[in-house]
Each structure stands twice: as C-alpha cells, then as structure tokens.
Image 1 (cartoon, one colour):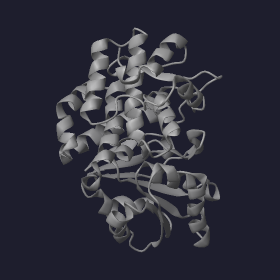
Image 2: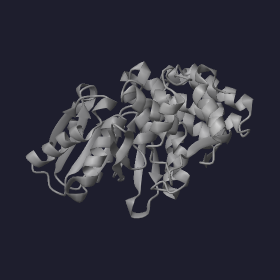
Image 3: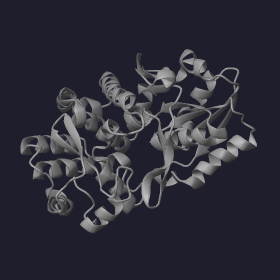
Length: 362
C-alpha cells in the first residue's frame, strides 16, 4: 500500500492506494467520527463491493442508497434521492457519507455531503480508474445541467480516499479505456517522463497489470495533489487539469450525457487541443502525432462526433466554468508535459480545429 497526502492545512487528507484497501478497517474507521453512515453506491458496483464495505463498518449504524448507474443520472433529481434517504433515516451532523462507485457516484455523494445540514463528512472509495486517478481527489463535487456539465456543485474535500486496485479487475474494458484518457492527460499537461512511461507500458495497463496500474494511479494522484494544494478552487494553476475538457464537455452535452463516456470525450478533446496548439505554432507536429497515437492505442476516440458543427461547439463551450468575461479559456500545449491556459485564440484557427473532424493534428 502507498499513502499520499493532499496538503490543504487543516483540511489535508490521505489517499491510500493498493490491493485490498477497501476492506482495511484500520484505514476507514479512524475517519468516521460518529455512529451514522450513509453509503451511496450504484446498481453496478453495489452487487460487487457493498457487502465487503459493510463488513468493515463494525459498530456503525449503516444506511445504504443504491442509485442507477450512468452519467445521465447525475442530476438534481437523483441528488434529491440521497437527501430523502438522509432525512428519512434522521442522519445528524455527525454522519459520514461514503461514496462507493465511480466519478458520478463520488460527485453526487460529495455534493450531498457538502450541503446536507450545511456540511457533513464524506469519504471517497472510487471503483473506476477514472475516479481513482482524477475525480475522487481534489474536492470537486456536483451535478450536471442540460445546458452544461458540472455547472451546479461545490468544492468540498473528503476525509480520505481509498483507491483499491483490486476493484479494477471487474471494470468493463470501455470504462478502463475511459480512465486511461485521464491518465494520459497527466503526462501531457505536466509530466513528460510519465508520458514516455505510458508509451512503453500502455499494453500492460490495458492488460490490467496490477503493479503498473498502481504506479499509474500513484503518479496521477501525486500530480493532482500537488496542483490542488497550490490552487484548491481553480483560481489559476488548477485549470490545467481541464486539458481536453472544454472540447470534451461540449461533446458530452451535445451527444447526451452518458452516450460518450467522460473519458472518451476528453480523449477526443485532447486531440483537438493538440491540433489547436499545433496550428498556433506552439506544439510541434511530432509531439501532436505522439499524443494522438497514444490515445488511439488505448482504443479511445481521436475525433469528435461527425455531426457536431463548429457553431454547436461554440454554443456549448460558451457555457463552461472556465469562461471568464465572456471569453472561453482553453488548456493547450507548448510541448508534451507543458500545458498552458489561453483565451486569446485567433477565431480562424479555432474554426479550423472545430472543422477538422478526423483530420485533427495538423
């Protein structure tokens, strides 16, 4: 087992990474101060891991809500089901909400914890690669709106994160591939050596080599913990974590949440970001080709949906948390391992990227 710490002063918390951490009472119980617990899971994960989690909660009064799975359920209506369960079972301010699932479950459980009785403790137990390397760390919680992804939410940090590598053995291939998009992101935005490691080890990751997966999760969590510690509420540096997301969120909204998995949309968005960076003269064509090639090896999309128009992209990207003073901010690349935030993009070059389709990466 490896332990990392997200350094946020009195709100610092550990990330435990390894095999079997889900069933380690000594890791979980110290972060549950009261007797009441609400486990929030979904109908895919609960049959696999809920009983194991409950067996570690010795002496706790444990309630459970099992939600339907999928990005399309990440709504205020579903969130209200969590509040119903908390209120019906008379959970007090000393309760702890535990998220057992992927990014959707973690985001909704965390947001519920952030606002129930103005804030109760919560714990993240991510069960997908994407949530282990990204969404469970850093305190972003929330739900989607029909007009924009994650536009309703709060920054709210967990008490701890338990990333059990063993649970990835039951992850569907498509979900594993989607998680690898976020893994690749960390190499592209700030760690060229990690990107090179991914080029050498992608086959092992796709084959679910436990040691390789644990290493990838650790590096990604280290990178995110460092950025979150420096900029918890995305005032500047943290926006770099959105590489590929401005384009990707537009794809998710256009196609209907859940049609494209988040990681799939981010993968295409990163290729679009590389293409635009290349057109600006920042990213060399060889680096752009390397980025696309690694994403393609993973089995992820390297182009946006053919039916999306530049106008549709612009409409959807204008409803984005990174918009400032009416200007869309993009996370682009100077080289592999060096990302920057830029809003002054020549419209003609942006139009070229939005129109390129499968010819992305100039």
